[in-house]
Image (cartoon, rainbow, N blue to C red; front, top):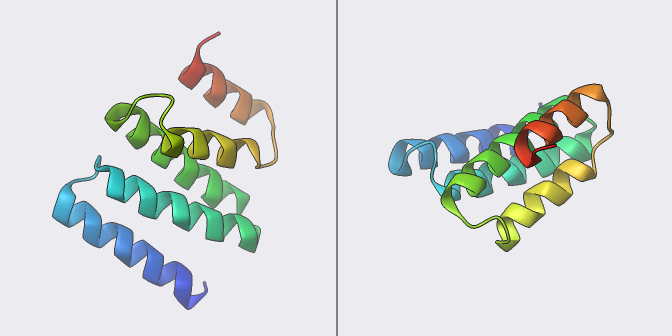
Length: 94
């Protein structure tokens, strides 16, 4: 693991403790972590991070908010498969 990834995880954890696990700042940190994991080729880790960020932002913000849209775009940039399609349907409906 690169030092930057460990540092980003600690930053997200610090914000979870300070603001709570469903705070938009936590979503921002987790989304940023997902971007780094994606660049490193850890698509499973990136997907988990992007899904969590989207879940938090959807609960805290309106669906059209730029952060919510960015999380959807990040998920769409990852390789697709049956599991992703099931998640998309669960989040967005049939």
